[in-house]
Image (cartoon, helix red, strand yellow):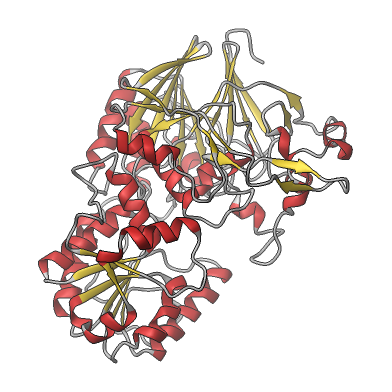
Length: 544
């Protein structure tokens, strides 16, 4: 623990260093220790695991420690995921980054799994500080997800050790344990929201932990002052943080952009952060590239919305829109296009649950599917729906739509489907000539290219007209793309990164969440006022 007047930052393997995602950065200052995010390391996991080979639940934290997925810090993890007989900590004492430490909290920038996923393994007594919208998303995502020990970000299923030294879930009469969440810059909770926060997706009871609300954007955590700013990103509730230390302010951007409908929030954050004259800026650099053009037009979410509306206006049959999970802003753009063209937007039960949960927070911005006549919910045919889905099916029965109904009135609907919903087309039986709008990230690795080819096979089979580029390597059926902008990313572009850094003008700069540290070296390696520090995995920086 750093007790002297210094700031120590520690970086870990697969933890947002020389890669995109998996952010988990340990900050120690003034006798206080906090993590900046605690994300799932997808790039590291893909080196060892795939769809059918995963960390063993019965091994608890063992597989994760063995493969360096999580930092070797004794004192921050759930005890119920440890197997005493395995003596992990004795083995880990020889690890160069092993330490015993109590942390005061985790600052969670947003609900994407590459920033939040490994919170599942953190001790439930450690508070998670975030925005109210992010806390809501974390719970709604877990409620409606397949239950595993890797998806317990809001509440956990306690484990117990068997005589064979394997971990298993306790009996269902043993309650879930809810984490301590703290929401900054949040309004008082409604009765409906309190009921949502206490709701469980199964019959297992819950040891309820009240969601702590701070109406201000600042709180004390240990000996540090924590400030939250909302920023624009491709998921609601994203935020940046400021940490006030005895040496000065540390700014952590999380993931951010300027080109969404809430770009003004990002600009306000940058302006306010610059006035703090921070000692250190930790910024994401997902879209950092060397060959960018300074005069290139920045494409926006409004551009995407306009193109989607034009396609739906021209469509002669069924329309499918395919975009990233929990991209609520894109969903709202499609909903607006449906309203303008006299169609209904059909969403899945999972989307309905998510929107209803978010409407408890953002009453005016997020439509409640129970009340919006322009939304319908598609009910998949299942022999045994999960408990949470049964509740959604019952609640939305009067707004539900079947495959047969869609087949009979194809020009009246737009389906909010993804690749994982396409087997429902077998029951819907769409007529040839429908429109498939691919409004998501293009394939950029071999695994995504394989999925993109499968998606194209579905599109070929049902004779949809494709708009968008699932995979630019296959142009065989791409004939409707020349005039349409159907996707913009959730991250700041190169020009925006430079503007952000120069405006905030920190004494020290650390780029993370990037594969192009060379971009920052070229732009700021010889800057007269900013000292660039490029982190490496399993490395610490001390600023005094």
